[in-house]
Image 1 (tube, one colour):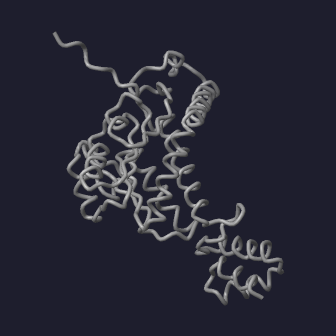
Image 2 (image 1 turned 30 degrees about the vertical axis):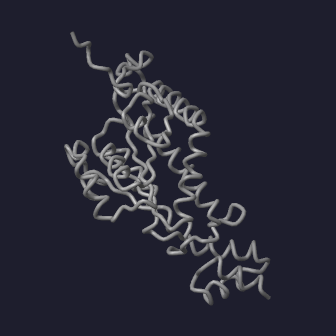
Length: 276
């Protein structure tokens, strides 16, 4: 006789918040904050896997390959957000770190019901991007059972691309089929099953740690300054002027002139100063 179905770790109920609906505003906030701390502690326990993943992704990008995030729902949106922030922050080409989202980019702002259950859509989207052996796919799924995320890694395996996973369930199929699995075990949510909370926080932390580390290793910052940022707003232009002034040892007037002479490119402005 078959046993009961395996209960998903992401669906378990947190004993300490069974009375959440009877708590004050202050008590609800304290409960959420306490569990959020646990999420970041869980990320700290997977630093070795994050290091392995960062080194693998660094090699992919250094070799001319591309890095794709793939996911659905909150997990997929976090992947889109991380990929979108890399060009303005690090001046890295937008086509080198991309994201595919279940339901398409329109699902970023409005949920597309049922999209996460289509493993064939993940394969189709990656094929449209001409996924190749030199690329890498990082599939993101809190439960590690989302068909879209699994389909993305299966397509990566089919073409010989690197396979990475970010999930919070070590027993999940996603963790099993990945070459490198990053699994911060965050435990049950304050609201059972709402993985936009602790699991989402852990995934966001892991993603920005990965992308930042890889970009630093690629030489896209100097010290801790954004020397390859895209100064596309007044705030970022002020930041760019400040970086050139500080690192170049010039006043802001000279820094502004240098930036204007080099099309707003901080790294080029600094390089011209250092050639003098």
